[in-house]
Image 1: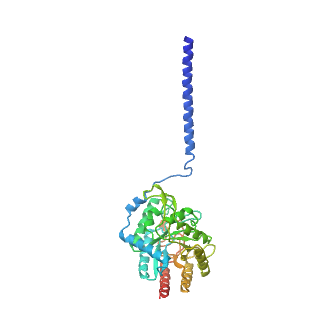
Image 2 (image 1 turned 180 degrees about the horizontal axis):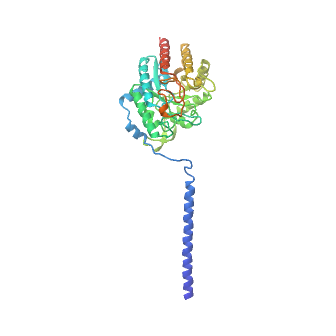
Image 3 (image 1 turned 180 degrees about the vertical axis):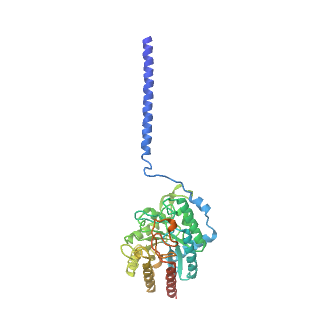
Length: 386
């Protein structure tokens, strides 16, 4: 009897020991599994910083009646020019990119006065670009790196980008920009009158979907190698409703369903060779006609059409004016890269050493050249309207 009780106690002890050993083994397996799961997530992400929501930023920087009137007027004017209801020429002009809000405001004040002076013949909209697409690497624009020092203070960039747009619109001057990041429109699109989808993102489904929901007319540039068909495909895609992942005004992940944008149009920016001449315009008109789209396009006087040489923008501009004089009806407007001072300057550089009013990206024509060109264009359009 005593022997049986001893065997029983020994068996129980052995069972308990085995139980705890197995539990420990399972616990270690759980640790191993957690470590394995951690190795699957954010392996190449160094940090995540939460931003203010679009709604919060808009509450800090609200739209007033003057700004709203400028945006609505700008959008309506562009729409009417694109559809032929307004015979004026659309001119989207301004710095290649914004890096200094003070010089941008000075430029805007000058351009606002010129817009008023020439408004009977030209519809002038300021180019206000905060995002820069890169073929490889480089400064990605004011929103991404507003301090020009690789600190990527995007919260600051969004705040001061919106503030600048409000101040420009407050002058009665509509603004144009390129939308590159699909989230940024939630923060600033309500104060933009014209938008572009660039040559490097023209084939992106994300950008075509985004354009289908934007509240302003959108210009689609031909590809960097000059293909027009991809831009035409993008215009047609953006005309239709889409549903896709995005964020709502509170910054929550959401399904965005759009209505489609009826004011998409082609922007010719050159490619492997320029495409602003009459023969290239006729070829573009053919693509547009085959797609059943409005016979309306914009010519970019810069980029590959000028070989990125600011002096060559005048040549493109004068060619467009001659085509208009010769009876062209499809060219609705132009884009011009312009700044207070001509040319550009090397970057990266110590921001304190940068010259005021000089581009840090593509070369721009000077303010004086801008005035001469636009007054010349206004004169040509005035004579055509007689």
